[in-house]
Image (cartoon, rainbow, N blue to C red; front, side, top):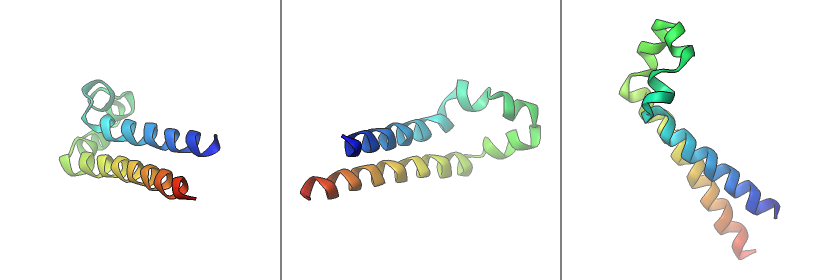
Length: 73
């Protein structure tokens, strides 16, 4: 049960982190980013969005590897 919950949590976080940079309501209208204009310019850069999405994909990869590795055991 612990493995299932761990894998599901990692997959949920990975999907959320992959989706967040490309969400207009979450990323472009974030109050923190709107409060600090210099930070807003930085995080709206495509490379930063891609890096954050890449971290989400990495989290999904780790979840799948964890599920596959422990399935065989």
